[in-house]
Length: 184
Image (cartoon, rainbow, N blue to C red; front, side, top):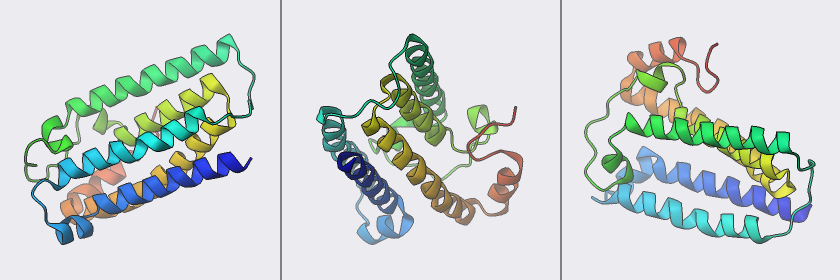
């Protein structure tokens, strides 16, 4: 059980660092023209050793492997990846990755963002819980739980930042569109 706690802590630390580096306070203090690109590269580079540790460390099976779990988990992963793809189509991907300068902030409220305010976070959650569904391992449960906690906390700070940027327009959007779970 110690390994799962370590994995959970690694993901929480990763998430906290990821959020801190995304904050306007840190961006403004560093004031580096290629900050977004450096942030993107650092995000990927820091994730690799955590994933490697998680994948290569033996893990207890918590849920029996079954065709149903594999199908359902696989469908979740496919849905999550599809939602990521749809979400990224609404962004300027080059600016998002830091390959080109970011344009002034614009509130996007159409497409998938008319159904849920944070489709990238929702996509991530669907994918990581799908991975747990397929594998049923304690290591992947630790990752899914830690990332769920991190994303929920991260959204709190992201929402505050978006209200600062867009003011009443974002507050109205908050009232009309759910944060993570789409209204059916």
